[in-house]
Image 1 (cartoon, rainbow, N blue to C red):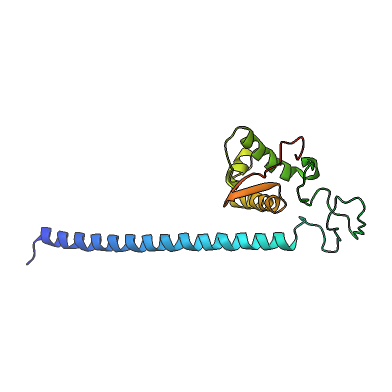
Image 2 (cartoon, rainbow, N blue to C red):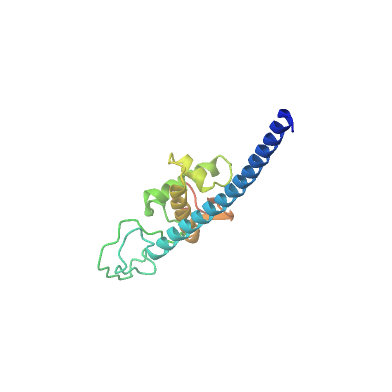
Length: 178
């Protein structure tokens, strides 16, 4: 007949093995969950980017006609529906002021101009959100990233490192674009 202590040790060993097995399974599930959450976030970002591409003017209708250079005084355009004021980002050129941009875009430029003035280097979108007093949540950060990428594409910003933005060469403080 086994001793009581021996039986207790056997039960303790079995319980320890079960705990170890469950911990390994929990670690595996936790890792799988992290991968699934990352994939989910990537799909959400992709959907928002597609929404931005399909509706680049933040809500203007697709019936709106836009001239290639909206700042050309000689160009004639016949929009069927009026575009939202300053909802488009023009291509930057010498002498163009920040006032042609919407307030959201001006905030991004101001945050980067402040950084440049203090010689602090590029900003990430999370840092821009925090500097602007926004909630640093994925939706806000991705909205900022979309706007920053649009400013890069139009020559207002530079992105020398992925996700790190600075003012483009020649773009100056809020008083003017040159």
